[in-house]
Image (cartoon, rainbow, N blue to C red):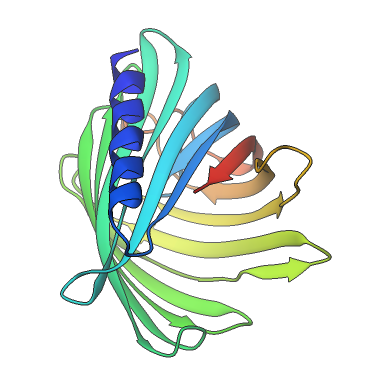
Length: 234
């Protein structure tokens, strides 16, 4: 409950910034239900409602875009997770074509038994274009002692009013590898008063050894998972 209150206070604060500053700020709230939540290709918590908030403030710091957000999954009072992040990014080139570089800092807080809290730093470079954007990502999770990288591709398309955002990646960390393929569908409609329904389908395969490492719930061997929710964008 305390984490939920903190998330709501963060949301209110971000909304206040949006109202007082003439600079364009994008703030998004969402809530829904996740079948399994994955972090860096390994499952963390299953069958959980979630709430989240994200923001993007362009040209906030020395010409860099400022991003951040929080995601809370709450299956029950003593078994929950929260994931917090802040980052900066910049596109070198044009808006729809160029080299996108970004850096993020994540704090993963776990209420799931045997999964410790951890802090993660990530650097990402991607080739932005209207079709498919390939990327490379470097990750270091300090408390877990896991360093690695991911290569993949992502896209953002629209067809008949339906937003389609596929993403596929292969990751190599110190003690495991994973393949993640996902697609998110969203539909903007006035019927729900500005709320946008969305759904994500994931396919995950890894060789994580749960007998030797305790930061994942189980090994995902070609497992399917899903997420559904509603999103509101200010």
